[in-house]
Length: 312
Image 1: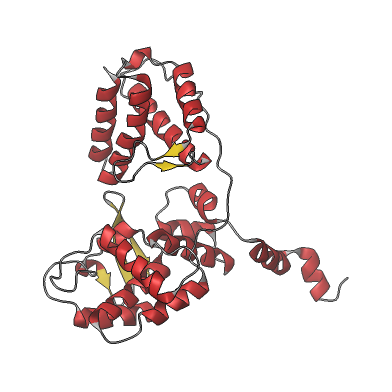
Image 2: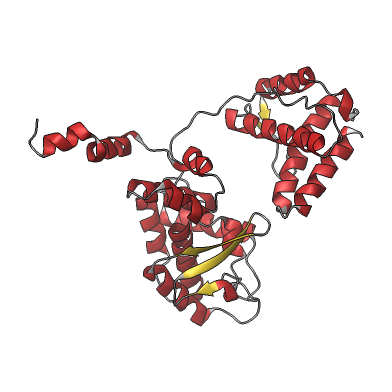
């Protein structure tokens, strides 16, 4: 089997396993870079050293997105997180080939990617959230829809796929839960607050007929696309003069950080976010700014507590 055939076999298996087109496309894009680097060689001819040369080449690049289907090539090397993403895709490919009996040994088994440093939080700030909600106050249908959409994102930690795919039949305003279907066919119910329920109810009164999703285009009632949600948020961020990140995933990060800061446990958070592994939740969202760390230390340190109680 040639490398190009192996990549397509992995993408097919990914879709057959119920994963999303986006996941398969990500594999195809990242492994396409490996195909360009090595050529369309037979998979049993690929060595660990070949893969290490590929990773070294990724680290040495001085531009980004040269192989991306939707982004123009841009100056500046790949970040450690981006390189790690390529390494994960390569390891996934060769694990799949070995698991399917197409390779006797796995040349990527000993491949190591640099562990990305945990940076500053990417979540939307409370102040920016307030500004967005203020900017969407009003009775016009677009404002009512956008207000409900922002509250839903901030209140549930939903991915953008779960937001745009939220079916009318999956929304329970009485019990304040929503059935999210994300990353292929993975479904889970998430709770939301009374504030969000009221905003959703207000939107549903104005929602145009047609289509079966909660959030839709104002004219046709057809389902919103991910690109449309991103465009709405970009315009709102400009109107509200926000200062930090405003995109669908920033609300997910913001929800997770606020949940942790407020004392929520990782297990519950993992369930709400739809993570199968609590370690994923910790690595992705247990990131705090220095001031937040100091506040949590003051709250939980035994010495700080003894000092407050006059024992020291």
